[in-house]
Length: 270
Image (cartoon, rainbow, N blue to C red; front, side, top):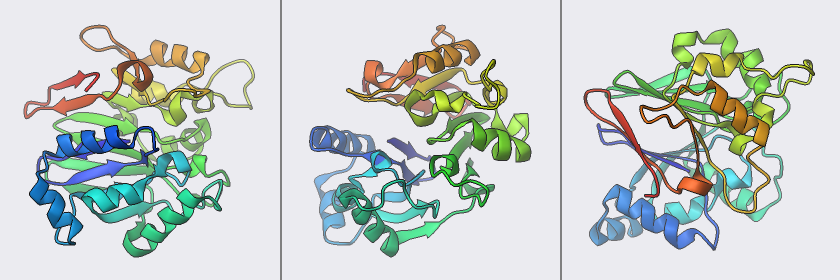
Protein backbone atom coordinates (compact mmCIF):
# COMPACT_ATOMS: atom_id res chain seq x y z
CA UNK A 1 0.00 0.00 0.00
CA UNK A 2 1.33 3.42 -1.00
CA UNK A 3 -0.29 6.58 0.36
CA UNK A 4 0.56 9.65 -1.72
CA UNK A 5 -0.09 13.20 -0.56
CA UNK A 6 0.41 15.81 -3.28
CA UNK A 7 1.07 19.41 -2.15
CA UNK A 8 -1.84 20.72 -4.22
CA UNK A 9 -4.21 18.77 -1.98
CA UNK A 10 -4.78 15.46 -3.74
CA UNK A 11 -4.55 12.23 -1.75
CA UNK A 12 -3.97 9.03 -3.69
CA UNK A 13 -3.83 5.47 -2.39
CA UNK A 14 -2.18 2.83 -4.56
CA UNK A 15 -3.24 -0.73 -3.66
CA UNK A 16 -4.15 -2.04 -0.23
CA UNK A 17 -4.10 -5.35 1.63
CA UNK A 18 -6.02 -5.03 4.87
CA UNK A 19 -6.41 -8.16 6.97
CA UNK A 20 -7.84 -8.81 10.41
CA UNK A 21 -4.33 -8.89 11.86
CA UNK A 22 -3.18 -5.54 10.42
CA UNK A 23 -6.48 -3.64 10.18
CA UNK A 24 -6.14 -1.51 13.31
CA UNK A 25 -2.53 -0.56 12.58
CA UNK A 26 -3.27 0.33 8.95
CA UNK A 27 -6.27 2.52 9.80
CA UNK A 28 -4.37 4.21 12.61
CA UNK A 29 -1.46 4.95 10.28
CA UNK A 30 -3.67 6.40 7.53
CA UNK A 31 -5.53 8.58 10.02
CA UNK A 32 -2.24 9.88 11.40
CA UNK A 33 -0.75 10.46 7.93
CA UNK A 34 -3.82 12.36 6.75
CA UNK A 35 -4.01 14.35 9.97
CA UNK A 36 -7.75 13.80 10.14
CA UNK A 37 -9.90 14.84 13.07
CA UNK A 38 -12.96 13.14 14.50
CA UNK A 39 -15.02 15.82 12.72
CA UNK A 40 -13.46 14.80 9.40
CA UNK A 41 -14.32 11.18 10.10
CA UNK A 42 -17.91 12.06 10.96
CA UNK A 43 -18.29 14.10 7.76
CA UNK A 44 -17.21 11.10 5.76
CA UNK A 45 -19.49 8.70 7.63
CA UNK A 46 -22.46 10.92 6.85
CA UNK A 47 -21.55 11.12 3.19
CA UNK A 48 -20.34 14.72 3.15
CA UNK A 49 -16.70 14.16 2.35
CA UNK A 50 -14.12 11.73 0.96
CA UNK A 51 -10.57 11.87 2.21
CA UNK A 52 -9.05 9.63 -0.49
CA UNK A 53 -9.35 11.29 -3.89
CA UNK A 54 -8.13 8.35 -5.99
CA UNK A 55 -7.56 4.67 -5.30
CA UNK A 56 -5.28 3.12 -7.93
CA UNK A 57 -5.58 -0.65 -8.19
CA UNK A 58 -2.51 -1.85 -10.06
CA UNK A 59 -4.24 -5.19 -10.74
CA UNK A 60 -7.03 -7.24 -9.24
CA UNK A 61 -5.09 -9.71 -7.11
CA UNK A 62 -6.54 -9.91 -3.61
CA UNK A 63 -3.32 -8.73 -1.95
CA UNK A 64 -3.59 -5.49 -3.91
CA UNK A 65 -7.22 -4.59 -3.17
CA UNK A 66 -8.22 -6.54 -0.06
CA UNK A 67 -9.98 -4.27 2.42
CA UNK A 68 -10.78 -1.39 0.08
CA UNK A 69 -14.34 -1.36 1.43
CA UNK A 70 -12.91 -0.80 4.91
CA UNK A 71 -10.92 2.16 3.57
CA UNK A 72 -14.00 3.52 1.84
CA UNK A 73 -16.15 3.12 4.95
CA UNK A 74 -13.58 4.82 7.17
CA UNK A 75 -12.20 7.57 4.96
CA UNK A 76 -14.24 7.68 1.77
CA UNK A 77 -12.85 7.08 -1.73
CA UNK A 78 -13.96 9.43 -4.52
CA UNK A 79 -12.83 7.37 -7.50
CA UNK A 80 -11.13 4.10 -8.38
CA UNK A 81 -8.67 3.66 -11.25
CA UNK A 82 -8.62 0.15 -12.68
CA UNK A 83 -6.77 -1.69 -15.48
CA UNK A 84 -9.89 -3.35 -16.88
CA UNK A 85 -8.11 -6.73 -16.68
CA UNK A 86 -9.83 -9.57 -14.76
CA UNK A 87 -7.93 -10.92 -11.78
CA UNK A 88 -6.32 -14.33 -11.53
CA UNK A 89 -9.09 -15.41 -9.13
CA UNK A 90 -12.53 -13.88 -9.64
CA UNK A 91 -14.69 -15.85 -7.20
CA UNK A 92 -13.29 -14.65 -3.87
CA UNK A 93 -15.18 -12.42 -1.44
CA UNK A 94 -12.44 -9.78 -1.78
CA UNK A 95 -12.85 -9.73 -5.54
CA UNK A 96 -16.64 -9.38 -5.40
CA UNK A 97 -16.37 -6.63 -2.80
CA UNK A 98 -13.87 -4.73 -4.93
CA UNK A 99 -15.94 -5.09 -8.10
CA UNK A 100 -19.03 -3.74 -6.33
CA UNK A 101 -17.09 -0.60 -5.42
CA UNK A 102 -15.56 -0.34 -8.88
CA UNK A 103 -18.98 -0.42 -10.53
CA UNK A 104 -20.03 2.63 -8.53
CA UNK A 105 -16.79 4.63 -8.43
CA UNK A 106 -14.43 3.10 -10.94
CA UNK A 107 -13.07 3.94 -14.35
CA UNK A 108 -10.60 2.04 -16.50
CA UNK A 109 -7.42 3.92 -17.35
CA UNK A 110 -5.25 3.35 -20.39
CA UNK A 111 -1.49 3.04 -20.26
CA UNK A 112 0.86 5.61 -21.77
CA UNK A 113 -1.18 8.46 -20.30
CA UNK A 114 -0.36 11.08 -17.68
CA UNK A 115 -2.21 13.45 -15.36
CA UNK A 116 -0.87 16.67 -13.86
CA UNK A 117 -1.79 17.68 -10.31
CA UNK A 118 -0.14 21.06 -9.91
CA UNK A 119 3.61 20.46 -10.16
CA UNK A 120 3.23 16.69 -9.75
CA UNK A 121 2.86 14.48 -12.81
CA UNK A 122 1.44 10.97 -12.52
CA UNK A 123 2.13 8.59 -15.38
CA UNK A 124 0.59 5.18 -16.06
CA UNK A 125 3.26 3.42 -18.10
CA UNK A 126 1.77 -0.06 -18.33
CA UNK A 127 -1.69 -1.57 -18.29
CA UNK A 128 -4.13 -3.55 -20.39
CA UNK A 129 -2.49 -4.99 -23.50
CA UNK A 130 -4.10 -7.22 -26.12
CA UNK A 131 -0.88 -9.20 -26.64
CA UNK A 132 -0.63 -10.20 -22.97
CA UNK A 133 -2.84 -12.78 -21.26
CA UNK A 134 -1.28 -12.71 -17.79
CA UNK A 135 -2.86 -10.22 -15.38
CA UNK A 136 0.47 -9.41 -13.72
CA UNK A 137 2.02 -8.47 -17.06
CA UNK A 138 -0.85 -5.99 -17.50
CA UNK A 139 -0.44 -4.50 -14.05
CA UNK A 140 -0.31 -0.73 -13.85
CA UNK A 141 3.17 0.74 -13.60
CA UNK A 142 2.83 4.16 -11.99
CA UNK A 143 5.49 6.87 -11.99
CA UNK A 144 5.29 10.06 -9.94
CA UNK A 145 7.41 13.04 -10.93
CA UNK A 146 7.86 16.05 -8.65
CA UNK A 147 10.58 18.72 -8.40
CA UNK A 148 12.84 16.74 -10.72
CA UNK A 149 12.54 13.53 -8.71
CA UNK A 150 10.89 10.28 -9.79
CA UNK A 151 9.19 7.46 -7.89
CA UNK A 152 8.43 4.26 -9.81
CA UNK A 153 5.77 1.81 -8.59
CA UNK A 154 6.28 -1.38 -10.61
CA UNK A 155 3.13 -3.28 -9.62
CA UNK A 156 3.48 -7.01 -10.27
CA UNK A 157 5.02 -6.67 -13.73
CA UNK A 158 7.47 -9.20 -15.14
CA UNK A 159 10.43 -8.56 -17.43
CA UNK A 160 8.06 -9.00 -20.39
CA UNK A 161 5.96 -5.92 -19.58
CA UNK A 162 9.11 -3.83 -19.78
CA UNK A 163 10.90 -5.53 -22.65
CA UNK A 164 7.91 -5.73 -24.99
CA UNK A 165 5.88 -2.67 -24.01
CA UNK A 166 7.24 -0.06 -21.61
CA UNK A 167 10.79 0.28 -22.93
CA UNK A 168 9.58 0.43 -26.53
CA UNK A 169 7.63 3.62 -25.82
CA UNK A 170 9.53 5.40 -23.05
CA UNK A 171 13.02 6.89 -23.12
CA UNK A 172 15.71 6.36 -20.54
CA UNK A 173 14.99 9.84 -19.15
CA UNK A 174 11.31 8.92 -18.79
CA UNK A 175 12.15 5.78 -16.80
CA UNK A 176 14.89 7.23 -14.57
CA UNK A 177 13.69 7.19 -10.95
CA UNK A 178 15.19 7.90 -7.56
CA UNK A 179 13.00 5.41 -5.73
CA UNK A 180 11.77 2.08 -7.10
CA UNK A 181 9.01 0.13 -5.40
CA UNK A 182 10.06 -3.23 -6.77
CA UNK A 183 7.84 -5.56 -8.72
CA UNK A 184 5.84 -8.40 -7.19
CA UNK A 185 7.30 -8.29 -3.68
CA UNK A 186 10.83 -8.91 -4.97
CA UNK A 187 9.98 -11.78 -7.31
CA UNK A 188 12.63 -12.96 -9.78
CA UNK A 189 10.03 -12.69 -12.58
CA UNK A 190 11.08 -9.05 -12.98
CA UNK A 191 14.49 -10.24 -14.24
CA UNK A 192 13.93 -13.80 -15.46
CA UNK A 193 13.51 -13.98 -19.25
CA UNK A 194 12.99 -17.65 -20.21
CA UNK A 195 14.39 -16.99 -23.69
CA UNK A 196 17.83 -16.35 -22.14
CA UNK A 197 18.94 -19.12 -19.81
CA UNK A 198 22.37 -17.57 -19.19
CA UNK A 199 21.63 -13.97 -18.30
CA UNK A 200 19.02 -12.08 -16.31
CA UNK A 201 17.15 -9.26 -18.07
CA UNK A 202 18.46 -5.95 -16.73
CA UNK A 203 17.80 -3.39 -19.47
CA UNK A 204 14.86 -1.93 -17.54
CA UNK A 205 16.57 -1.46 -14.20
CA UNK A 206 19.62 0.05 -15.90
CA UNK A 207 17.29 2.72 -17.28
CA UNK A 208 15.37 3.18 -14.03
CA UNK A 209 18.73 3.43 -12.23
CA UNK A 210 17.21 3.82 -8.75
CA UNK A 211 19.04 5.18 -5.75
CA UNK A 212 17.01 2.92 -3.47
CA UNK A 213 14.84 -0.10 -4.25
CA UNK A 214 12.07 -0.87 -1.76
CA UNK A 215 10.61 -4.38 -1.53
CA UNK A 216 7.11 -4.57 -0.08
CA UNK A 217 6.77 -7.96 1.61
CA UNK A 218 5.08 -9.34 4.72
CA UNK A 219 5.57 -12.21 7.13
CA UNK A 220 5.20 -15.84 5.99
CA UNK A 221 5.82 -14.86 2.37
CA UNK A 222 7.83 -16.78 -0.22
CA UNK A 223 9.22 -13.46 -1.45
CA UNK A 224 11.63 -11.81 -1.91
CA UNK A 225 13.77 -14.03 -4.11
CA UNK A 226 17.41 -13.99 -3.00
CA UNK A 227 18.72 -13.62 -6.56
CA UNK A 228 16.34 -10.71 -7.17
CA UNK A 229 17.56 -8.98 -4.01
CA UNK A 230 21.16 -9.35 -5.21
CA UNK A 231 20.23 -7.84 -8.57
CA UNK A 232 18.50 -4.88 -6.90
CA UNK A 233 21.62 -4.42 -4.75
CA UNK A 234 23.81 -4.47 -7.86
CA UNK A 235 21.74 -2.06 -9.93
CA UNK A 236 20.68 0.46 -7.27
CA UNK A 237 22.95 3.51 -6.95
CA UNK A 238 22.61 3.87 -3.20
CA UNK A 239 21.55 6.79 -1.03
CA UNK A 240 24.00 9.31 0.41
CA UNK A 241 24.33 6.87 3.33
CA UNK A 242 25.04 3.95 1.03
CA UNK A 243 21.67 2.24 1.48
CA UNK A 244 20.47 0.38 -1.62
CA UNK A 245 17.65 -2.04 -0.76
CA UNK A 246 15.05 -1.88 2.00
CA UNK A 247 12.26 -4.35 2.73
CA UNK A 248 9.10 -3.47 4.60
CA UNK A 249 9.54 -6.70 6.57
CA UNK A 250 12.73 -5.30 8.10
CA UNK A 251 12.05 -1.55 8.02
CA UNK A 252 8.27 -1.35 8.49
CA UNK A 253 6.30 1.61 7.16
CA UNK A 254 8.44 4.10 5.28
CA UNK A 255 7.90 7.83 4.82
CA UNK A 256 9.36 9.40 1.69
CA UNK A 257 9.35 13.20 1.56
CA UNK A 258 10.33 15.39 -1.40
CA UNK A 259 10.84 19.02 -0.39
CA UNK A 260 10.42 22.24 -2.36
CA UNK A 261 14.06 22.20 -3.47
CA UNK A 262 13.80 18.68 -4.86
CA UNK A 263 15.69 17.06 -2.02
CA UNK A 264 14.30 13.83 -0.63
CA UNK A 265 14.49 11.87 2.60
CA UNK A 266 13.33 8.39 3.53
CA UNK A 267 12.44 7.52 7.11
CA UNK A 268 11.84 3.94 8.23
CA UNK A 269 9.71 2.35 10.96
CA UNK A 270 7.08 5.07 10.88
